[in-house]
Image (cartoon, helix red, strand yellow):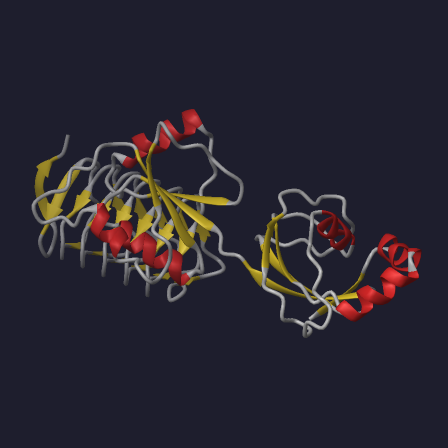
Length: 331
């Protein structure tokens, strides 16, 4: 709990009319107030501002703390005095006591809002990771019409699975989207075409992207991660590893020491990359594949599921098997 002195102006009000003051003292001013602050500095001075906004007093004889809660949205309270700045929105619970000189404050973090651009079968992993990090999956922005295949799960079903966990995210088109304060952004699709989506978002909004890491993953403090990187549950990113922007690392992946993974590459569940390797831009390493150490994988290459790569892979080629062999050239 944090104690704060009410502004002097309130004390002057208290002494202005002694009869009213005695009555107010009996009332106790026991109203419970919830005030939402948005990344601003605030202090006890905001108590007077809230009172001016119409905080009701209690009724004579009403027990302390029995008044119903009131929700007040305070959008701008800059300049109200010093308070330790926070990285997220805070809800301030203010309990007015019989003594106008003090108010008891408690702070509860308000979850940040995650906006996902584009929908795919991987969006449930993004929902899961957001919730595990205390984020709210607030919006899914569609840049293309949804085209679910016969065995795909539609976006509506994935959103329905959130029932009971959080409010359903808003689904809107890219044309209708407008950035807002305190939002976090990440790309939804994992296919190489997501680079085109990122380019369009850059042209329209010049956004900065959130790096989303599941709490059960381990990322060495000596590793480097670019913007928009996703790291799924139980993955391990070793010291010296470098993941460029928008790399997608799915569940249970191991990336060895000093390995560099290029932008827009995706590493699917259970894959393992040895140390001191260099993975190009837009590479896919499929489920359960292994890339041995000190290898080069060219831009746009595709390593098939379960493949064991023992030698360098040229760009734009598909390799499969154990040991991995050339299958075809990709366009």
